[in-house]
Structure formats: structure tokens, C-alpha cells
Amino acid sequence: MIPKPSVMLSSEAIAARVRELGAKITQDYKGRHLVLVSILKGSFLFAADLARAIDLEDVRIDFLGLRSYGSGTESSGVVQITHDLTFPVENKDVLIVEDIVDTGLSMQYLLDNLATRKPSSVKICSLLHKPARTRVAISIDYLGFTIEDKFVVGYGLDYAEKFRNLPYIGVIES
Ligand code: 5GP
Image 1 (cartoon, rainbow, N blue to C red):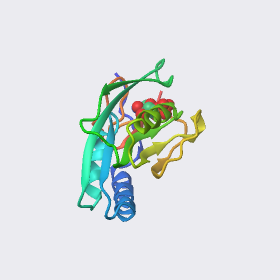
Image 2: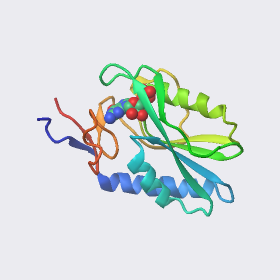
Image 3: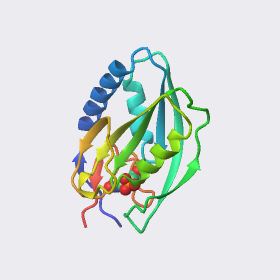
């Protein structure tokens, strides 16, 4: 049995930060046609909360499923699309909603892939960033929290598909 993860970021702290990010995004995209692209599976809770914190008339939401190959908790940068967008994003303002930028390899793949679809702009909103493990520098336009180099779970993030339903971001103590 894996012990219950200890709290790194409480659900209250996350909710407060999501409200701030939503307010900033609302301000920045006023009068524009925003497409939120939630990266599955990890960002499903973050995207659901963030979408409700954005007060704009024209917000569309789509999902892009990614599977990143690697050994255990290491990302390799080899990424497979498991679920594609359901509508074109050409000439749209795309905001990628991601759970965590770790090495940056998955995000680089995603940026390259989305660029081929000719959106008018692409920005990144990530709940978490682990700068200690950067391999490709990614400029994150809207960032929830910078965290230390620990493997985190909860609020959408998993360990072997478990813990996605935890309402907080936690760490499995070994
Ligand atoms: P990157 O390609 O930036 O190294 O990794 C991105 C993906 O790896 C994230 O979208 C996430 O799915 C997974 N990942 C990276 N760090 C963590 C972590 O601490 N916990 C969990 N659960 N997944 C992580």
C-alpha cells in the first residue's frame, strides 16, 4: 500500500491561485476568441476550474491527449497523441492548459505540433513548473506555482493512474 501523499499545495491555495490566473487571462483576452486546449489526462481538473474562473464571452474548450514515454517517472520527449482536437484552431487564440512543465520536452513537442495548425497565437498556462529538471527552456505565460524537484500527485496528476482525484497537490513520501 502506498501511504496517503503529504500536502504540498492545499486545495485552498490552488483555488486562490486559479482565481488569480483566471482574472489575468480574462483581462488579457478581452474581446478575443479564446480556445482552451486542456492536455489530458493531467490537466482535467485544473482546466475545469480555470475555465470557470475565466469571464469571457467566447471561450471554447478542447482536449488533446498526450502520452509521454519514459522510464518510470522520467520523460523521454517521445510523445504520442492519444486524443486529437475536435475542431480546427486556425486563426484562433490558443491557450494550452497543462498540469506541469518538467523537462519541457512534452511542451516543446506540443508547441511544434500546434504551430502546424496555424493558430493566430499560442500561449501556455501551466499549474506547476519544476525548473530543476529543465532540458528545453519553455516560456510559461501563466504559471500557478514553481515547485522543487519532487514527484507530485493529485489534482489531476497521477502515479500509475492513481491519486488523480486528490483535491490537493501532494508528495508520496518514500
Ligand atoms: P516533461 O516532458 O516536461 O518532462 O513532462 C511533462 C509531463 O510529465 C507532465 O505533463 C506530466 O504528465 C508528467 N510529469 C512530470 N513531472 C511530474 C510529476 O511530478 N508528477 C506527475 N504525476 N507527473 C509528472
